Image 1 (cartoon, rainbow, N blue to C red):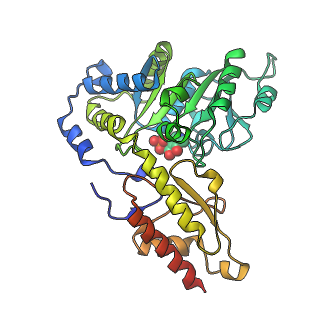
Image 2 (image 1 turned 135 degrees about the vertical axis):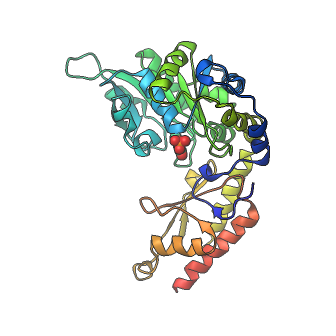
Length: 351
Ligand SMILES: Cc1ncc(COP(=O)(O)O)c(C=O)c1O
């Protein structure tokens, strides 16, 4: 299925491939709340096999999967240690306070890398005044465009084991992380008690994520999924394109990473552009436009995004002064050249 606009806002915008649509049409489905859906069972088994976890559970979204993991690992009023720039903190609408009823205690944001000495300081010992530290959350790949070295994840996991604190990995883009790190997804998943990953990002499936972990964890999570309204019925129709995603789309993410580097190189050559090349591990290019004060009056988020929109290019407004362009299945080099030309002509028009 072709997309009309060049959409650089995220890899979540990707429409399903023809093969995915065919898989949906021909899927075998049943009522999954009765455990009757063979396709969703196949997807969950395949996910467990790839991540080498005991069991897996299909859920509607990444946010759902993360929040389900929090709810399942913790009790009300518990504390969760988490880097301040993780998706669960920044972009899940405060759900952890609403659903699990936990307190998020922030660790310094360092592109997902956790400082063990900070963890040691922030972990709570037994005291009547303190909440119980129940969980540590990691994110890999990180939505800042970087990957977390497995040595750091291993240290966090070992710390958790030492103090009986569970660990959860937001692995929305675990396959991107695996490619960037040159590791198997299972090697990353081995360093957390539970893992969530998404099908509807660079893998192009329309809907869905999986949470994986031990048999006991998934058994409780299944009940909690029902509580959260995520018990789905003939869900095989949406699990089927996810199986295609797992079998056909994970290896090709490498091209998205290469295209991101191609785009970064071209943007960097433009006057006033500062590309954050230290955050170019996956399919995301972050940059700033550093104009002199007099010129920056003409350069506004609104003008820039509207101009590109008029050229049939969709981008998000800047966040904390930075733009993020995301490459994916529907972004090839020809489109990247077209985007860079459009950006260039916008900047030239300012002068
Ligand atoms: C790192 C990360 N975690 C979780 C999510 C949430 O996924 P969803 O949009 O399916 O809720 C996203 C979404 O972009 C993400 O980037």
